Amino acid sequence: MSAVNVEELEVVPGFEHQNLQGQAFQAASEDELREALEKAFDYRGDVTITLKNGTAVEGYIFDRRNGPTLAESCVRLFPKNEPKKISVAYSDIAGLAFTGRDTAAGKSWEAWVRKYWEKKRAGEKNIELKPEKLD
Figure: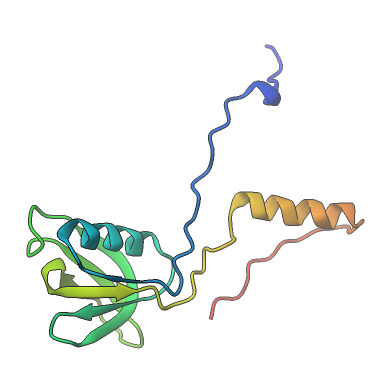
């Protein structure tokens, strides 16, 4: 059995997490709405969905269903400060904003390793990197 040379292993770039916190999207076209909702699904914080009737729903999107039409597509979310899940049809959405703190921002494997080595170089022993408290 030969030893593995890690320098020769194929390296695939990681997923670059886009900083969306604070951004807002208006549903100018069906494609733009679908793209914004895909980003909202990948976002690890709350979003505020503005409905065409003028009401707003804030919460965490945990699922989306892409159908052939906007009326047959929906996002499912946990509304902020409410115990039940709701479903919103894409056809009812006028826009959305990334209003909550993105809990995944800056939390890549590379960032964790960098913090580890900074502590190691500083001479720390028994290094423990603990996760941040979520709000």
